[in-house]
Image (cartoon, rainbow, N blue to C red; front, top):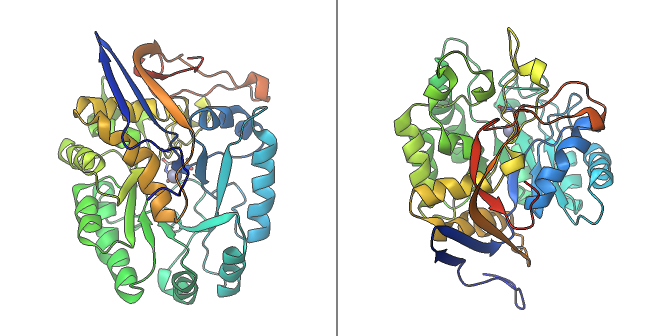
Length: 370
Ligand code: DOR
Ligand code: ZN
């Protein structure tokens, strides 16, 4: 429920006038984003801050954000990189390692700025080398998390190279996640960027302590996108895109109205040359259309009136925060995404290839300069 005096609307305004749809919703938050650091942070933060009031910021920097002190310092760098006048609020996370102590979790609870702990299996994805080698080593720390009520955010893929890359989420659920939730029944868990029907089924059947974020790209694309007319590095992310029946299950979950599913873009910028390489990095940059792409998904599914709950209400409820008080208006009016985002102003010679580069996005935000 909204706090007393909050300016939230009972339902989004949904107006059809001729061809134009406009939708006013409580300002959304992004419950999973990579903002990076330094010049890249300064280049990408305005896109997120223009759309979202708050974001859960991933801790997988080159030197991971392992302690509350490091999270506070990173938060200061993010605040300093905000565009003038922006009230964007970064919600910080800690990077779980084999050596994270229960005492660090106590410090996290005492901090007003740390909202969750991220579990990367070692070697699963970008900057995960310092991740967890065996989750059983962290059981004391998970017990501390359960006791203080901070959520564990999970990159849900096994790293066992004998497991097919398309099966790694389902196998992770069976081998790792089920034992965790059985042993720690009150632990809050977010299965981040869920990509399979198996993941959706697990979350639906689990108690209310278990939720999931959904990315726009996994809702919009199936794995064919990686091979459309050739090899497409800009459609490569982790967990990797899955087959169509999984994408359809994700859309069903997103529009279901279940409070267990909420928005997390997983926008993950990598400079062009690191994507277009013999061994390209995983990650799609979607922050430039971070809410607009979800509007496309909900519009195509005939469920635009459910976007507000998914984007603006379910996440705060899970994290125990109030919804935002201001609003954002989306207008169905196509705009062209540039082929590259120039990073020269941020001091990076290379560019960033955004999602839908050279193509169109069907919604824009009112007052946006797209
Ligand atoms: O595609 C991805 N990119 N998946 C992740 O888990 C990490 C992210 C990144 O940091 O680039
Ligand atoms: Zn991520």
